[in-house]
Length: 105
Image (cartoon, rainbow, N blue to C red; front, side, top):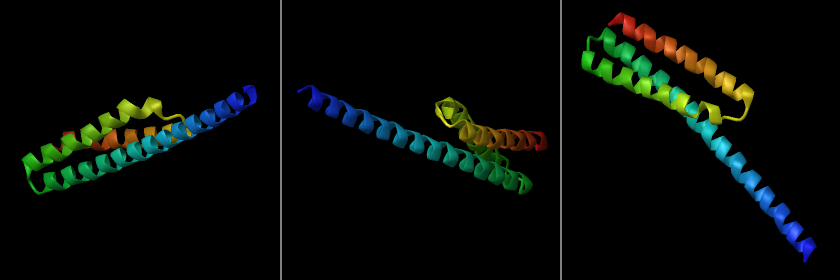
């Protein structure tokens, strides 16, 4: 009875680890996509600004800000230090990009 209980416990631990690993991969993919979207929206805002479309500029810039906020909301849940640092560098670049848009208008 003890051997089967121990074996089941090992199986559960393995399943839990796999679920945590999958959740981490999903989180990394999500944060990566959010930062990509942030840059896309910031670039769109820049284009809208040069075209004189103030309303579309504001909307795109706000979407870029929201993507950056999303990163900050989830960054501490990323367990890989190297991955977190890479995302932080991209987020810093995005923040500078968004700031440069604000100074243009």
